[in-house]
Amino acid sequence: MTNQIELLITPREKNLGGFSVRRILPYAQRQMVGPFIFLDHMGPADFAAGQGMDVRPHPHIGLATVTYLFEGEMFHRDSLGSAQEILPGAVNWMTAGNGITHSERTGDDARKHPRRVHGLQSWIALPKAFEEIAPEFHHHTAESLPVFQMGEVQLKLVAGRAYGYEAPVKTYSPLFYLEVKMAAGSSLSLPDDYAERALYLIDGSVRIGNTIIEPKNMPIFTSGEKITVEALAPSHLMLLGGEPLGEPRFIDWNFVSSSKERLEQAKNDWKAGRFAKIASDDREFIPLPE
Image (cartoon, rainbow, N blue to C red; front, side, top):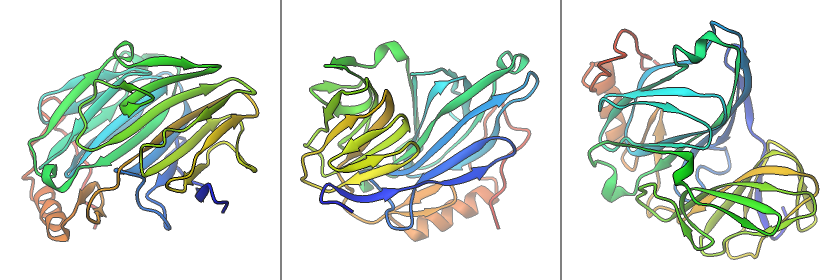
């Protein structure tokens, strides 16, 4: 790689029955970028009337989840009693802490019509001091998030702090997560106040130094380097990163922890039915993979 780019990730693609998902993080050579430990690019996927997504109830510990949509809608339910539609540009931020169960499905009304779903799903690992806090759920409308212009670049701060702005989303460690739309010929310098930074290109074409980045790729940038992104075409991308956590993280299925023993406990708890259930969605669940 160049001095500016430490690693270039090409996601692994999975077809989940007509629904395409690209797994970006974790990657064989890189588990995390700042506290971001999981990142999936889902879709774009077209559904006919009567069809929809059904991510059945499943558990999490030790992380926060965010589903960020560009198109379509999903409906979130969890064991705290939350029931919230996810719309494009809005943030549903669920902190799993010591344990939560949730589901994400196509809503009944949305299922009546043909539609497209496109977005990103990410997990943010919690610092050790907050891994076992009580679970929380917070919804933030698209209108509540900072949107600003830098030349011919439009930015939306999904979470964290960047470029002098702060999102209302409650986070537990220093991070930034931005949706960016660049006009052809425009350029943008990345925030340089975070140790770990990356870009995920959804559409378009950008150049960093002498390296051209094609869609569905993630360059992870070298710490301390000044990074300028040049748009060779109209481009849609996400910027993300933050400060690394102080100790390693382990992943097992939907669980993240600084302790392998805690992961085993969570697996046993799910298998034994000890996680709280979703009152409005308790007829089925995703079993622990054996």
